[in-house]
Image (cartoon, rainbow, N blue to C red):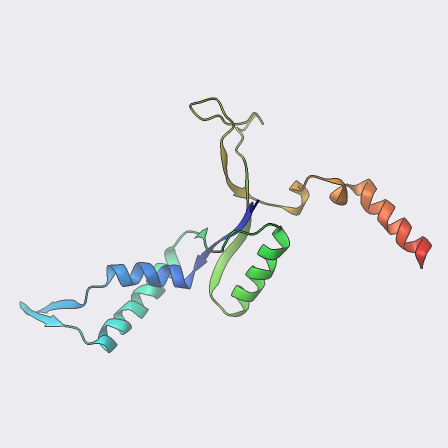
Length: 142
């Protein structure tokens, strides 16, 4: 099951929003003027920059099975200058401040995209004792 994704402010999302916002018709001194494709693209580029500067992070990546894939995706996107404020998110049970799970109207635990940290991972591979055991095993092999 895919349970990880990247939330970020992304240029292509800002561009989609700008394309919806910018009209191809302008009124100059009360006269309707249809923009050429180049004029419209220039206005869209300006609006894209404005939107990108102020937008909140949204889901920008496809779903991934492991958080390492998210980190690889972030590395490539940041290298190309396409995103900012990237963070790995996990599909987890939402909790209240006291630690109890949030419930929906049917009494089931509510799930949400929450920030993921490597220390959140469950399982043997991230347990400190397991890591120490693996390091000892490496030392005896080599």
